[in-house]
Image 1 (cartoon, rainbow, N blue to C red):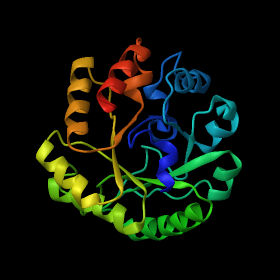
Image 2: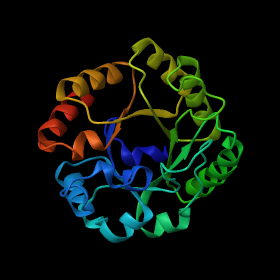
Image 3: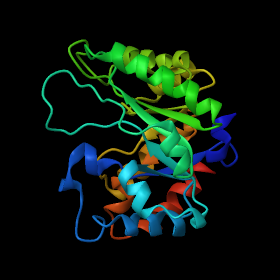
Length: 246
């Protein structure tokens, strides 16, 4: 219900730009390091939503663009060692005040700290839904409990946890196996599955993967570097839309 604000005909392509906190400036060049460029890209490309951390949303989001805002509520740097944990950095109230229609949160399934993230996320779901915001959970299996983050059973378990915890949309990685992905989507039940874009791929690789993902009943993409690291972003956006909406 809450996720409908991000969907068109049951599908979506979300433009992700939370990498500055998660990865540092190594993903950026002189053009895409400027969040204004990303906001322009989201508006001109007519994405179903743009994903920002609080600071970027405060300073660069333009409500008049009509592009739905998704505020990422937690995050960590890549410099942290040991089992990962990502604590809440922004409140649901702040997201509402910024004009968000949805909030996002990462859980590292299998980390020794997963119980803390579960507890924090559960409170976020309750507060977000009370404010009629959709909730997207990034489900990334990592930590001492995970031998292979792309294992079919681990990914399906992660998707099921998203459903059990009340997420409206779960963002997952694709392990390049369509049979596995179909099972993951079934495990997620009525929680919609979007696939993370990941590191930059060639046009051919990206379009092939997206065709496979859509064929497995995912509801779309949450994609960043494969859009804004390109010299021809609008060309690839057009091709992706043709695949997602058939």
